Image 1 (cartoon, rainbow, N blue to C red):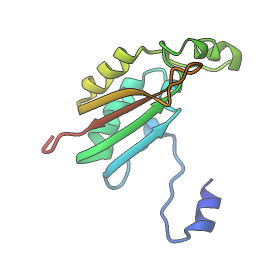
Image 2 (image 1 turned 90 degrees about the vertical axis):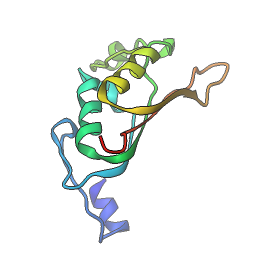
Image 3 (image 1 turned 180 degrees about the vertical axis):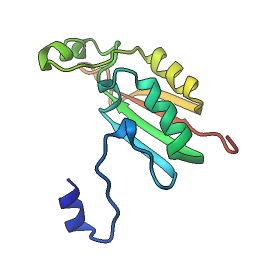
Image 4 (image 1 turned 30 degrees about the vertical axis):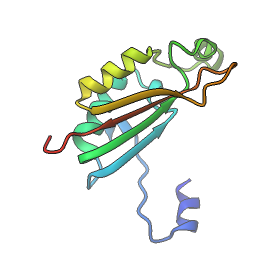
Length: 130
């Protein structure tokens, strides 16, 4: 992906790292993660790290996950794929964001339909002067 990104934007800066251990050189005003958090054994740790070390004051986290307790069809994914997934409920995700220090938290099931409960979309802000 980095090679492709450099083809498109050779002036860009790119990093290859294990995210839980990575600390950026500068902080960001927006961090987006999709289908990543539940692969960690303790998503709370990375949420806290994103809040404390990756975001500027007033910066936002936007995260999406499809594996969560209320999405019943996703509950067998860890066994089917033979990979660790941390299963958390909507309330547990909200608590994790709060415990990490996020404010202005919004959580909703995006693109929900009759056959799909929706991607769990989560939004949280690092407070100004935090």
